[in-house]
Image (cartoon, one colour):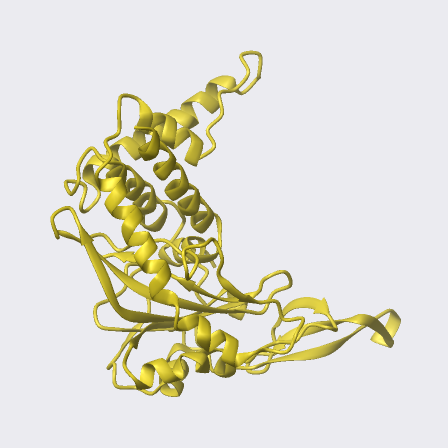
Length: 326
């Protein structure tokens, strides 16, 4: 299967959304009146995960000490092999940290779903917070992304996820703008109160991002700076002249540069703050959210948890660096 989104037995995507279809064009629509539990059931993320013993050897009689198999209760599929110190958190418990904010309507349900056979499960909530740049034409809304993971080396997390409305470009970042996001490593008992507290400070990080956006719109890209920026964001290195594949590498690099130059001028909202580092940064976010990848769900997984997320963080840091120097 070429996509990352998990499916029900009847082939439907394990994802639900409220309102207009999301930027990744996946899932089925909810009414928006569902409870959190009902929303999770519609998304297909109401399963639990157990820790199974592992046996090996002839006849499978030898118990493997120190490790357990993370197994879904609904499909009996093993998601990963982890230390026996691992403490899985049920999706129901982890996502319940948003319940009090849903009750006071400071956040609302947006999307929820299951990626990679259940290894990554998310709940996206929309904050009652937004900002606009470029004379008020270019709006960005605030979301909180709660991610529960069943995979060794992945911590469950809560992150700020701003979404640029005109083109649905996304970026995940720290809740408070200080380079930190809230994480739970699965090696300690889950602290629901601490997780709930982190949800409450998401607006601080969003305001920091608003300041960055305003700064980028005010700074112009000069000369070939955008090409240099692309090379650094996408790690395009000039091959050694004697390398056997030097010509092919140069051609591949040039295709990336040409693609981004085209995206710079044509992505939705390209005319907002044209010529600024905000335009340059959003060309990269658009490329990663809407262009790169085999399918929409591959782009979704990458945008939040993979190479795409890392590249967009790098793009914001470098855009700010170039804008500061201009």
